[in-house]
Length: 143
Image (cartoon, rainbow, N blue to C red; front, side):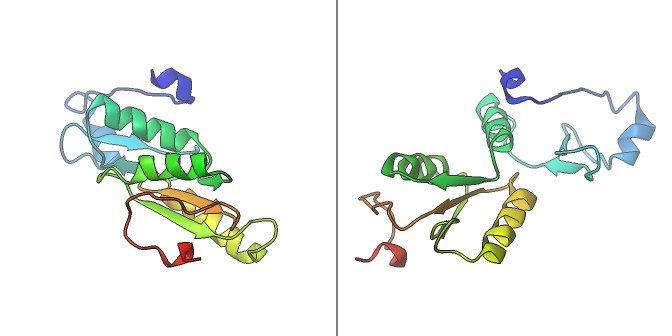
């Protein structure tokens, strides 16, 4: 299943490869490590260990750090991913092409990239209608 997400996965027996285990900061089992590029420091995955958790993580990390929300269906999908009690999502309102200053969009993208492993990030323009989503009041959706 994870092969579809362009990920390389390896398994190391830390009881046999103690030096590697110590170098990687393994303090308990299982410990899952990841990084997005060869130049990046290794990070410890702290999510769930069930298949659905790992596949969800792989999907999030395989997508762009910032999801463009252009339709109500995109918005619904973002809410579905983030409003299940286990995930966190952040949305920047405005349009990358017209409403938001380029430095803000750049900062948002950098922040999303740095935190992609722990949260979902999105950007939307004002044309997306705020429909009924059974969420707490959102000031950005006031008419």
